[in-house]
Length: 180
Image (cartoon, one colour):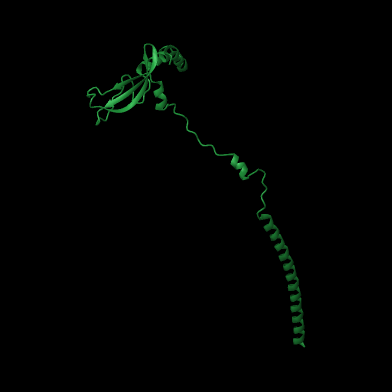
C-alpha cells in the first residue's frame, strides 16, 4: 500500500499545486487588467488635446496687418531734374590741353557758388576728348560728386572752426548772408 499512499500524497500535492497556480493566475490576471486600465488612462492623458485659441488667428485679422517694407533712408541727394530747376547760370568746362572743337559732351555737374555775395547754383557741362579716361573737374570743386565750391566750404570752415559756432548756426549765418 505504500505505492498507493505515495500516489495519494502525490495527487494531493499536485492538486494543491494546481490550486495555488490557479490562485496565482487569477491574481496575475487581475493585476494585468489593472495595468491595462492604467496604461490606457496614461495613453489618453498623453494624446493630443484639442487646442484652445485665445486669440483670433483668422485670415481677416491677418489681412489687415500687412508686412511693412523696410524703407531705405534717403541719402539726401536730389535728382538732376530738381537741380536743373535751381540753375541760374551754365558754363562749359573743357580739358585744358584739348581743342574744344574735338571735345564731346561727357556729363553735367551742378555746384553752389558765391557770386557777388549771393549763393548761385551753377550748371557745368563737362566736355573732353572721346578717348580720355580722366574727365576735367569744374574749377574750385573737390571731386566729381561735389556740389559745393571751395568758397562755400571755406566760409563754413571759418565760421565753424575759427569762430567756434555750431554747424547749424554756421549754416544759418551762411543762408542769411547769401540768400541760399
